[in-house]
Amino acid sequence: MDNQADFSSEAVRTVDRNFYVDDCLKSVDSEENAIYPSSELLQLLKRGGFRLTKWLSNKRKVVESVSESDRAVSVRDLDFDHTLVERPLGVQWHMTSDTFGFKIATKDKPPTRRGILSVISSIYDPLGFVAPFHLSAKILLQNRWRKQFGWDDSIPEEDLIRWKSWLEELPRLEEILYRQMLQASKFW
Image 1: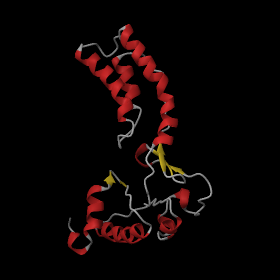
Image 2: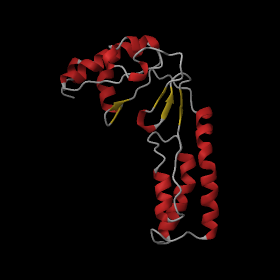
Image 3: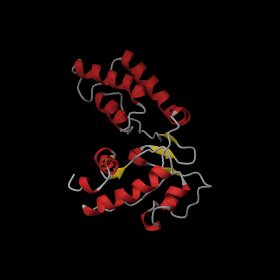
Image 4: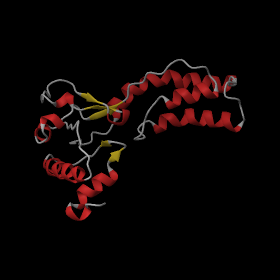
């Protein structure tokens, strides 16, 4: 806000709305709409003592507009012929196909409130892509809470069947999401 009078409203809005901790994620509709704003964003943040690094895009022209030292290692040599996968905010971004996906790797946990919460929490989804899938497991957990089950009490047989069914579907989340995610234009 200190420098908003000296920069475009788009650059200021980007700083205000497109950062998650120290990662800036933004979609634009063309290469040109990525190149100029990125240089302006760099200037704005530099005034506050911040330097953006690890830049990447699924478009060569946009990556070329950023100095090599500021590029992400995966795009530093501009080799777009290989499958590139980045992990912004814990989500896999398959740059070549411009799709999102997840890598699911949960450990075997006991069917208790503690175990269920551990498995649910291991699926990091800050963008809400898997919210519909998560919901049934969260409802199961919520019901255990309401009935005041202890953290390490086993869950009843009826809930155990639902839990095991959910766990069996969990690995399929990787393939389903990869095919069904929206094809969004991600330039920077």
